[in-house]
Length: 231
Image (cartoon, rainbow, N blue to C red; front, side, top):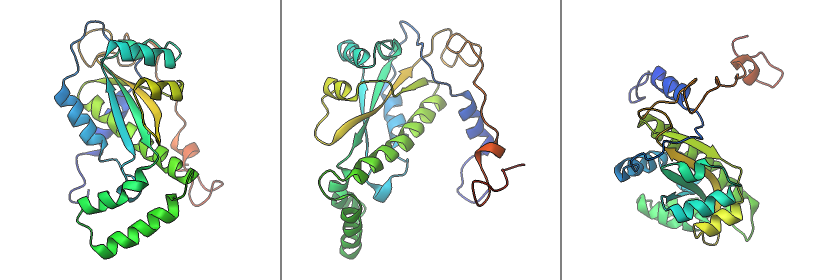
């Protein structure tokens, strides 16, 4: 591996293999420590985003009252109420308007700042430009996966949800103009025994993992009709 590339690839493979969408959380579990949440959000912030605009924001819901409102917005999915923390992943569709602040934080030169701002405005500027929303959603998808893997590495389980009324969810957590609820992620201790239980065949996942397509069907060289990877 190249210098600075990180740990062995099998460590990431094990983490990905262990992560399952969890929809049953342990009743009476201790609160998720704030220090863990801070570390998880810090890890998620390392996910890439166009021009480093960092479109993803997070509302960490622990209030039973707010969870109840979000449970209704999520059509009664019980994990919304039973998890330790419900993470509302928020897409800031106006993040491009803060590009100058991002560049200043990096100490960008005036020349670089002017060049990047011109590109950002060209790509995402203009009222109602759909590219701004599309980019925010792409960034949030990358950040959400980073968040879930970070949580898994710390012994928590997560369950991502897209089945919810985004407007109702946004109202429940007080989102502002240009902010949209992109995803809900239930996070906490899985139902069953000690933290980390509930893998395949356990109380939270009684069924084996659904079959995945092989690399030969997922990836092809040079064109969609090219040779399949490993074929």
